[in-house]
Length: 406
Image (cartoon, rainbow, N blue to C red; front, side):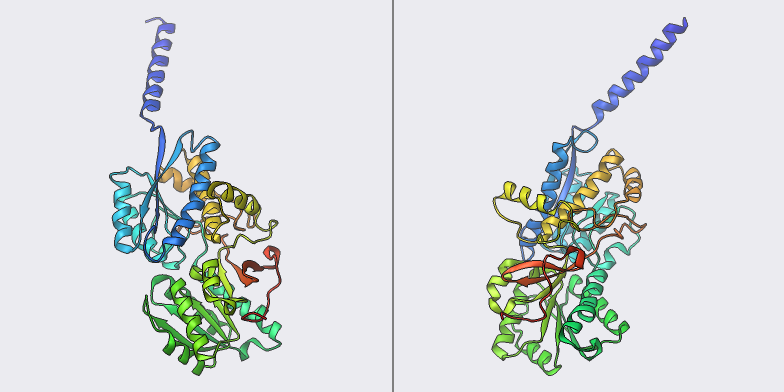
């Protein structure tokens, strides 16, 4: 056979193979978006989804992931059992090649297990319990901070900011831990207790309570008897309302209340509690009121959110999910899709300096899948608005060392 005919034949074979691969390549990248859309976490679940949705629309406008448009397939995870069922549905009938989620740790813990069994990448943008990434999973990646970092930053703010502002030694303050007996609350409380003891501070009491408790009167009396100066509380919105109502009825409150995200993030909570909520501190992902120099793109995100949804963000959950989704979507793009080994290589190669994203984070993932450059911030309710007060580079206001309206 003449040489030119052999070359033409070989070229034709490769051209046909490439055409076949192109034809086999899906026109879209189907990914699940597993968030609570009903139940007690519906509000933060929807707010978190909006951040992912904005990041996905931005990526699609720029050409998508490796030339394919990303299609978000929503799943409702109102509790752990439903999180598993919805994860399986998305991976099965909906043919999702990766899953994003999840907001609450108990939901994430369940859904990520289901995804790992199927070998499907799970990209966690909001659930914080340390144990989520401590199970040796190879297809799990978490962009957001861990509970241990939330606890450490909070105790640090008490010792390094509140105590000096009150003109007292940190070791003279009596700290009380109050938490819901769910995975998020327990995870934060465990590390808070360890951090208090390691710093030589006083733990006045630690109180756990069952989910959906209706009466916080006895809890307030125990806190009062413990003479708590600072109350560290990890709980959902309804718990916060009952707690502050119980403190008002008892005519007692500590010098400061510090939340750990959840209901402490929402303006609805501040409005429902009233003037007594003024000054409350919160440790969580960055609120939208954060210095642009420390969180470049945060202001642009707020503008984009307003255009898309006709309102301001309801919490920083949308901002943090947006920032985390951008990190993960970029890795998917570099990997050419969601094939797990290529995605793992792309995630491990991610190297974004701290303070280079709209949430104030960087990105560098370890072998467990945890982003080592995600940091929570300290915020405070001031004049009806949640503003960043620590760290200094991200602050838009100084911390006020008092609880309640002046």
